[in-house]
Length: 58
Image (cartoon, rainbow, N blue to C red):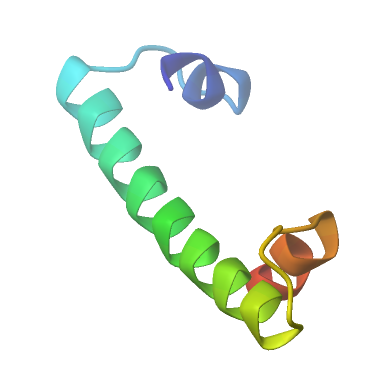
C-alpha cells in the first residue's frame, strides 16, 4: 500500500495512512466483488469472469 502512495508522489507515508488506504481499498474491492458475483449469477454462471469485474466497476 505504501508503494502505491509513494509511486504517485508521496515523499513519506505514515503507518496510519497505509492502514486507512488498505481499509478503503478492501471495502471498495468487496463491493466490486459482490456486484461481479451478482452479474455472473444473473448470467446463469457460477464462475466470475473478467467481463463481470469490468462491468461491476462501471
